[in-house]
Length: 346
Image 1 (cartoon, helix red, strand yellow):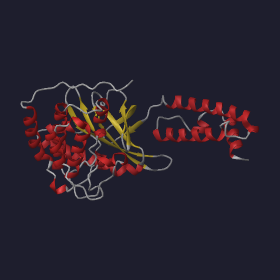
Image 2 (tube, helix red, strand yellow):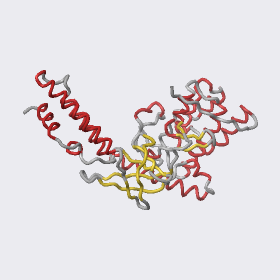
Image 3 (cartoon, one colour):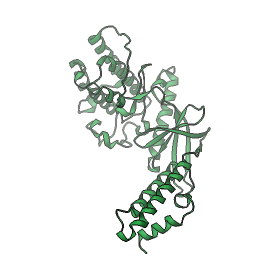
Image 4 (cartoon, helix red, strand yellow):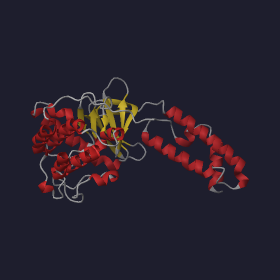
């Protein structure tokens, strides 16, 4: 019996969608597996791909398969998925973000937290790095009066999930919810493709430098300072540096690289990391966000922070004062500028 006829017989014989796709659940791995199986079976019995002798039967099987999967998905989407962490229990709500290695879900109810779930157990070391970096930075913030914490996500809890079928263990982080009011610099860049007004970029860059200086003093290099990993709050002028899964200790090889952003990395990409790595990426980001609107003095400032030799780049903590001096020279006395981001949706 060939694959086409056996698949058609299977579809014709099932009485419930769970016989094909398993018990309906909100579990993302199960849903992904069900979707893959649906697409594989749909390809096998598609009327355009079978022998003409099976065309009528294949058409009926395709319609039945589509209905079974719709029924399964509708029921799965009504299920709640709950995880138990070291210090709390979390029921997943809506999907609120997709990062390089993980998906983020708001929790249902009144909890103001998000659950960050890696898409593969291979990312466990990266989740552990994020946990360690945020914990160290939070400890450092306490010694500085707490002001540092405004620039970082807050680590809330750890979840260790074991897959009941494969036995694979997945490390999951629970973080504070930054999904309200904040947008990424990638969103800002899409809204201002010709470049930001440098006076608007000024407050964003000052806060980004503060975040990097604090991280470096806590003994961590972010290594992935890209537009997707910098959140801003346009109204409150807040800046939060996210994406700490890639955090690496100075002197170590980078924990991972974002393949879609290789042009943002410094020349020492294949070498051990140092705080100069972040300094380079932050000023590469400055060049991207300002484009042709960057003033010549600010461009020279950025180029000085992007020298090929990392030993010649300034430290982030020293750049805080130097950038303020540059802003005084360019714009004089500092004043508050309201900032808005127009929608890029059609």
